[in-house]
Length: 191
Image (cartoon, rainbow, N blue to C red; front, top):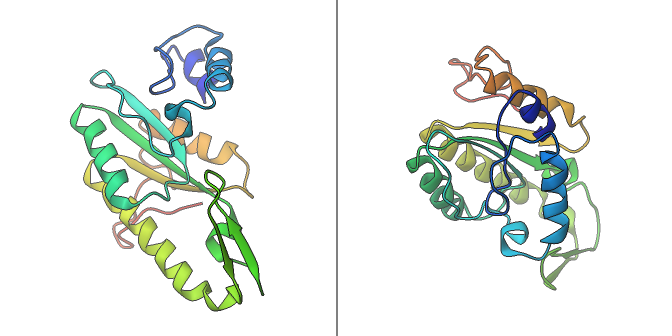
């Protein structure tokens, strides 16, 4: 996405880590900055850092966004109040949504040493899926309320799909089937 934006003449930055730039090497500089600062709070946090963005900026936010909805709303609202337009792409593995496991499973946090063992994980599936659906509905409501777009991308699908949807959204092509909510359905489609 960074490459495409720079080629289109846009200035890009990694929130809280780099300054906006329009150089043809911007994507390489961002990648280098990520590698250099991999242990910084701005990179480790699952929410965008509380950095001040210039008014009328657009923020492209990619992540799992599994933090508590109140924390997400607080951060997104602060950005929107500063005049930032946002496009949120929630990235999930299909196994995260279906909890397609059986038997005894150990879950470990990738960020901490926290672990949890479920003896019969299949008994948790209905409640887990309901909670995840409620969480996604909260994200959709948060972004809808502040006028931001929201898209779900699954890791078993090509990365080009959300990128194409983002490009269409940024170009103002509101007829894009992934972004324009169907009035009869009341919510946007997801991939």
